[in-house]
Image (cartoon, rainbow, N blue to C red; front, top):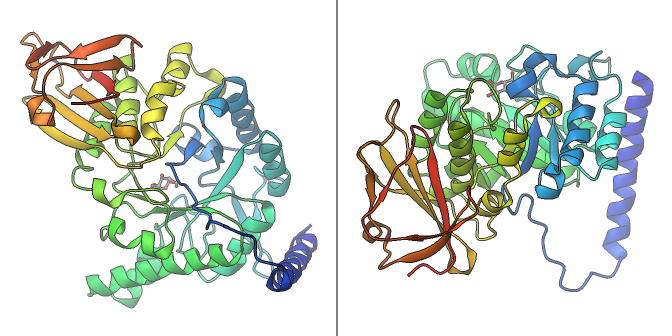
Length: 408
Ligand code: GLA
């Protein structure tokens, strides 16, 4: 098994040289546009938020099955991402093997692909992942080739032990140098992925350290975490929403701010909180990676995750992230400019225990709009008209999300 894995890597390397040589002499295709990876925010599922360390081959296959059976695939969810704890040991040649929970990673990737889906995996630049499994330090090229050989389409690369292994060791008293070392490490894996020739979405997970929105696109990053880990409670979700203010200008096709994976359907989030969380991730042009137990999801949670109108806001091809237009007391108003001149408006009651007994009054003028605006309420599906100074009552943590096709 081990021998086979290294042998097939060698064969693979040989095959890619042959392909390169053939391409050199082949006539150039006309009008070949360069391929943009992640032209819209990636959509799919990730194992961590619900299964944590207990993820295994069976659960990943079940998630893939459910993505198809529930209609999530048709709604745009494509990536089935295995997070931490799949990693086994390296053999004498340094080739990493999956652990006993994942007996055959290539077979699993083939299975996921056979459903018309894509598969993602997880590692990091340090010697160990956050859960203490083998990571990619000094094996970056080897690991990237292994992923390509397995047929991996997405890599989440998590900083974790690189902080102690390299940053603290090599530059104990020099923060700036530590950050340079970190960026170099992400660059190294970015180049390793690129040189496999396989389009692999590159997801940076280093919790927003050193403003990754400024440098990640330049090293091939398709998305970068902007904060620490999300948790399945409103405090965490709102804290993350709040930290996105000011980052919109850095997002666009192929490179996205990542406020972390979805917790919709997890913990004790109320229906309003699930709706608001999902709506705000759409407003933020965030990756939509469901993080719940798909085989046991309730019809309500499924309806939220597959709301096509809300997904269309997230996936809008213009790729302009929404911004907070203004806040008034505990109510916030966010807007997002969409292709074709349309606009999404989100009115969010972030207050803890208030059913707004004093209704909030919407100011269209503050959104640059004048006069009544015809739109669609994306959660009721009803046509609505927003008017200047309109009173809006929202339960605690609930949201009004309206798409205005022709804002004036
Ligand atoms: C970090 C990441 C999480 C998850 C875990 C896995 O905490 O931020 O998203 O990947 O590691 O150990």
